[in-house]
Amino acid sequence: MSSLRQRKTDDGPSSSDGKVSGKGKRSASSSLLFKAIICLVVLITSLIGGVALVGRLAPTLFLQIPAEAGIPGFVLWFLTGNPLPPYFTDAAWGDDEFKSWIKPGDLVVAVGMKSGTHWMLYCSHQIRTKGEGDFHDVSTSTPWPDFVHRPGQTWAEVKELMNTTTLKDGTKLKDHWDNPAYPFRIFKSHYTPRTDKGGVLAVRENADVKFLAMARNGLDAIASLSRFWDSIEDGFRAKWGGFPPLQSDEETFTSAMPGGNLYQAHFPYVREWWQFRNEPNVLLLHYADAKKDLLGTVKKMAAFLDVSLTDTETSKVVEQCGFKHMKTVENKMMFTQWGDVDEQHVVKLGQTIRKGTSGSGKSFVTPEMQKVWDEALLSEFPDPVMREWALNGGPLPP
Image 1 (cartoon, rainbow, N blue to C red):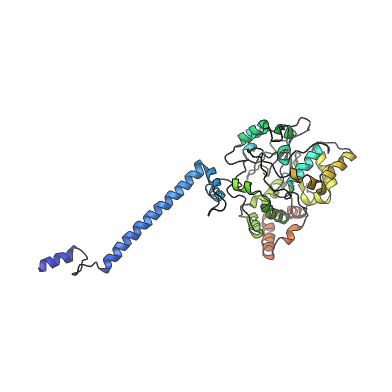
Image 2: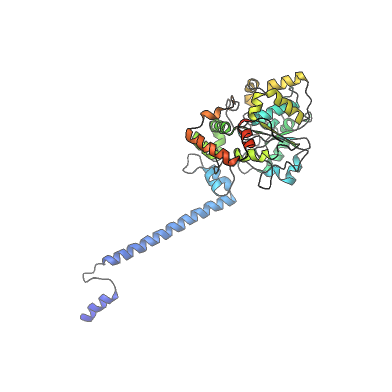
């Protein structure tokens, strides 16, 4: 009997009454916990791997996730290495590709975000037609090669559509942007000049193409951007996985500061175009100067574009470039998506032409935001001349 009891003792942690000891319970529980953790790790790894695979092979699937989902589709799109905004592409501006569609004398209006883009597109059109030409729509008369109209669309497809599309009103798209009656064609962009540190537009490499850039007081531009989120059509936002998301003033401000996802919209934009301010094929303007002296701005633009205007023509162009007239054509500034089957608009009617006053950013910021802004100005614009111009405009230095 003693030897039997000894074997039971030696064989394992059994007690004399057949119950498992506390040490055995802990060992079994630890084993189950370990297995559960392994299963969870495998599951998470599989999910991450699946998301990464979709991001690499079919990222547009993310954009079908509705905005009200726990994670908006555009977030997964971005986290798997895809660009924001999801409807931007720089494919049109590569060296060989750019030369395949651009012509000498063409104008690229590359204005900063919320810094007068539609204003300069419309005013450039008025100058080339001497105030007499029809402006069909900002997206048809002055197309935007940076933009794709639906998820998965390529620049090659957009370029084909630019030349073959018949619009719902029965007109040919090409007749609006490539009209032989126009002395030059106009294209929109938000990109900056190519340098050894980045940028997209080959400005110096294409001296026979003209580039018009315009900057605006950064706080004014950010304030306008914050209001812009509400102007986006719900259908457009849904098509792009919830992008752009609705943001508070504070969120918009933070995203435009160094490290934010909208940082490129102001500080780098000003710095990069500033380096090209004296290039003969570049006209760098400031929003505040154009607001103060629209007549002088129109004359400067006409001279740059080699368009001779009589006094009567100049007066007409100035009138049509003014706020009062542009409000009457606001329905042509909603950006029709002609590259998609439904030709929906990007923005709502009544939201594109605002007062555009200078200094509106002062009432937009809190004291805390103002402190962050002042610090960013000093670090991002160390040159005091450039910093003063970025804020308030004025003559450009040599």
